[in-house]
Image (cartoon, rainbow, N blue to C red; front, side, top):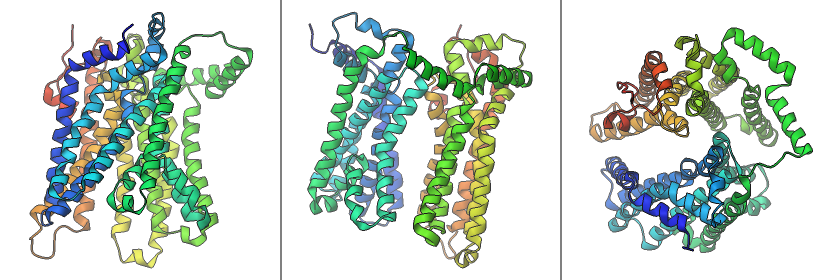
Length: 557
């Protein structure tokens, strides 16, 4: 028998796939664009300073990409096979668990991994400019490769344990987020709020984090203690093999349907009753919401959804109470207010982005949406039902978050240092306005992406990129270009806080208005057409590149 036959086949398929080559080209093009803006930001600096800034920018962005690449590439690889009933067919042959796992890794992650490899020559440019040593360059390359493999294997392990697409992607995201940000955050809190003798525990928590390994790869840290870097890199490498071994051990058995045991059946029924209510509660809830809007009932059947949002806010409140108990009056300052507001806003926005198009995307993928559009419901009523479900889940938490931020604003105004700085109340009010605008835009764009995306996995990511990422990319680019062009402007300089806050607010509102209005108009015009067509709508290359929802739709016959 051929060694690793699935891997060999998938590598040959990947070699003929366009995305394998376009992914590498786009990664290099993006690195070049970032290099141009870093150069403009360091125009008057020396070559060494420019090289250090370019290297730092590229490696941190590349590490973020590598850490969460598994969520995009491998988190739904095995769970999709289980849903379609094709995973068991592989084990009717002589294939082993490791054959299937390595084959799925090669099939799903080759294009993404090639994009990471394509960045390494760009990372060598600062080496030629003298801002980075040879040892630091190779240590960073090692960390990026280990992080990418760690992410891919962790996500495929979650996929081997899951059947639902949503649970697999969410589980992989939170597992990787725990290693990337959760452990460093816990270590920071231990160092901040506990005596110094707990520093050893904090250091142990940092070791499995790829960001800790990246920091320790720098020359200044590596010379001070190279063992920290090698312990971290070795542990990440060991976890990669552990995840791979566990996935190969689990996958031959996870696809089989076994008769439910009595205890397991009771637990599942208890969970089902807690999520949806018992038979009487479900009947009452169905009768009440069907009279309001059937789509609202379809999207809001799980009564646990609003509870989870309130539970997340309660966890943040519990963290606040813990900080107040340990730090006392020192806890009440802007250094805590702003991070708390950013955490609450980001949590709500990401949650809305994940829920806005979920129901439409799943129904469209399964074919259930074709049945829905055959009913007498109008398109307006369908969209209204989805908005009612989102309002039921997020309106209360949104109002609470706005009230909390207004309290933070009032508390900040009481401080003498804030009275002389009008930027702070402006920032608070602008943040609240952007929170509401982003939530509305995420709802419309999420529904539009659910109707046009080729795969349900891409809906949330595309929605986040358009509404949350694009304005920040534009803001950074315009801010750098403005600083470069107006650097020699006579005083007073136009590049003050009024300019930057106004630029951020205007770009955010224009992005929200443009995408949400376009999505709303085209949803009302083309909802039934999109729901009934078998394949995703096609668009021009520029339309696919910029993701505009304003292109004419061409239905495939």
